[in-house]
Every structure is written in C-alpha cells, then in structure tokens.
Length: 413
Image 1 (cartoon, one colour):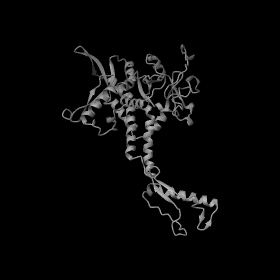
Image 2 (cartoon, rainbow, N blue to C red):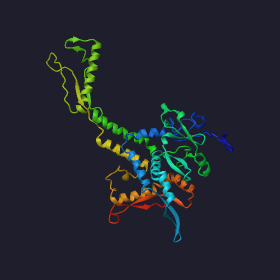
Image 3 (tube, rainbow, N blue to C red):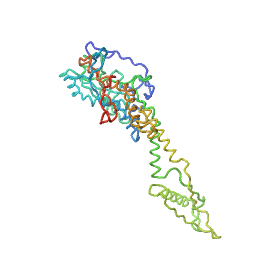
Image 4 (spheres, rainbow, N blue to C red):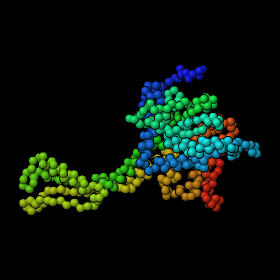
C-alpha cells in the first residue's frame, strides 16, 4: 500500500514479467533495482548505439526516416462539415500560438521523432505552468530514463553505465495520468511513456532496426577488414618456407638452442615489419644464402606469393547485401536509402512515387506515437475539436512547381 498523504493511496502489485526481446536477464520482481531493467545489462540503448557508431549507413537512414515523418512540421487542424463531408481545415489562434512558442513545439516534435526512430520509446516530461494554465512538453533522453516499478519514472544520467551507476542520483517522477488533469496539476512535473504495444513487450518497445544487429556488425567488419587490408595487406599474401635448422649454425660454427631461438624471433619480427603495412607495398626482399661444397645454393628462405581467391567483387556483394538488409530493417525503401543505385527504378518520377508512398504508408504509426502527447496537451487546454497533425511534402514536376516541392496537409492525425 502506497500512501501519498491525506486520502490518496494506491496499491502496487508486482507481477512476474519481463520483455521477451531485449529484456532484462531476471524477472522484474526478483531484480534488485527499483526500476525495470532495459536489457540484460540495463544498457540496451547504449549497446545498439555502439553498434552504429562506426557504421556508414544506419544513422543516415534513421535521419531519413525522421525527415519523412516530420515532413513540413506539425500544424493545427479543426474538423468542419464541408458539403456534407467532414474535413480537416487548418486552424490556429493566439492561445495555441503562445503555447507552441512556450513548449517549442517543433523542437519537441523533432526530438520525439529522434527517440522514436532510435529506440521506439518516447518519454515526455509534462510541466504545469500555473500562469498560463497549460502543460509545457519536453522530451527526456531514453538513455537516462527508466520505468519505475511503482508506476513512476526514474531519471539518472548514469543509467547504461553498469560500472559507474550511481543510483543515489536518481530522480523519481510520478507518471502522467491523461484521465486526471488535477492529479497532473498537483504533481507539477510528471512523465508519460509513448510506445507501440508490441507482443511480449510489457515495458520497453524496440525499433525494427535493432533486429538487424548482426547485419550491422557484418557491415562494420567489412569496413574494418578493408581498412586493415589496406594498412597490412589482404589475407595471407606469402608462404615463406625455411629449413628447420636454418639458424642452427653460424658459418661452420654450431650455436646453442637459446641463440637459435633468439635468431628465429628476431628474423620473424623483421620479416613481419618488412612485408606488412601500407609503407611496404610491392617492396623487394633480399635474402643472403650459403653455397655448398658443390657451389650450389643451400636450402634457404623460399618466399611464394599466394593467390587471394576472394575477389573484390565478392566483398562488394557482401557489403551491398548487408546495406540492403539494414535499409529493410529501418523501413526505408532501398532506392530511397541509396543502397541500389542504377537498378532501373531510380528515375525522378519513380523516386517521387516512392517518396509519397513512404510518407503515406510507412509513417502513420510513427506519427500517431509522436502526436499522442501533443493532442492530449491540446485537449487539456480545453480544445475538443482541434487536433495536431503533420504537414506533408508533395513532390511535383517542375512545370507545376518551380521549386520541385510544396507543402500539403496530411489528413491523418
């Protein structure tokens, strides 16, 4: 029983549950944390960010998806009956304009979309403004926000850093109640959580591109391979054969085993430095040899170049396939993602059709998650027939629009 003072109280019941994908390693009721662990190490967003830090594709695709969702930004619309049909017409007034300025609505929207495409969870901080009698919205970074077991939210800059967590620095904030405005006013600051309810995920949702973690790792390995290949030479390039007793004698003098091992070690180090590295490409190697009693060369160092059976074209195919898999996981059409240029479907008109398809059919769920708190805030200001919606970008031909694009209203809220 949680007693908040006075006649207010709530019953907390912990039930055995955890996220099926990217969840904690233990059931919630057995975990020592007061918040719900995000990933086995409570650092799943950090793990995924680490995977894309040196990737040349993912971050750009996430930004492309963000731009598709945002389009021309958020505006306000009102339902009106026109010729017997319900239509959305652009609407604004001074109070909405003042609230948009106070809460920095466009910046909030972009921040919320960034959280959505990165990890599929949006944590919104609600702060009541008693002078204006409205709630200002801001986005909490998912990397430092967790769901509390008591129905609240925990904010801590050390979340995600298992070896440096300072839980005493945690700020606990009550959860926002969209059905009880007075409760939110009384708390002054609350937090809401917007996500798509995925099967098996009672706590944290996850972005579709997280399922391409291995494809991302593959692409990263190819980049690292080519970098090291340029610096040190691709694969094993030479087979070097030497007689086992090559360093057992110094002229006619026999040497002990300790000196022989030292000579082998020094020769091996010198050989590696000579044949490897970007400064030693196509260099000539000089080997001195001894003559036998018959005047012929005695067994010495034999260097044989090896053929690389893995061609550059094979590496290129693996690279392109990994990029296509990543683009598919993000939800961007491959042509728009730029991963299959010259494939016959990248003309101007085809790209225009694909861009419109991407906006119309691949963004509504994302937009619903982003607009949810905005429309709740508007309703709590007393507006019941005004809604926030995205203004799309309509690509047109140059004869109709010299700039190649024009803003149009998206009627889906």
